[in-house]
Amino acid sequence: MSDNPSLSPSAVRASREVRAVISRLRRRILSASEVEDITLSQASLLARLSDRGSVTASELAAAEGVRHQSITATVASLAALGLVERSPDPGDGRRLLITLTPEGGRRVEEGRQARTEWLAGQLQDRCTEDERQAVIAAMTVLERLTRD
Image 1 (cartoon, rainbow, N blue to C red):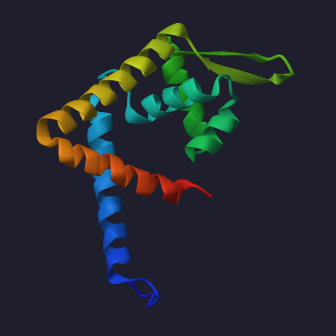
Image 2: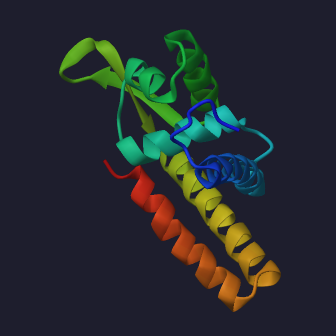
């Protein structure tokens, strides 16, 4: 149970179940689009670049919650694969900006499409229409928890 007596048993149970299911679902969704030549951390970095455009290694490290040296190594491996490029920052020549290449952008989109198709297929094959509608309703509730 919980050490906090103000939390209802149902809130504690819902919290545990949501976290466990989201964790397992996240791993399954990510594995649906795994590409053998890149790691999950490389895929995460590519997705972040897709969302943010050109950024520095320091900005990526902060966003990913890892050390600068780890990002530098990951960026180097992605550059060797032709998925990102590094160029001088026009505003500060001491810094490098990291940007997706067209091939990197294509890989990100393919991964997103594969994950979407996998999850939609699972929902189609393993759930009834009523269950899918329940999932949609539950997502509305969970979305409310993410708003400040």
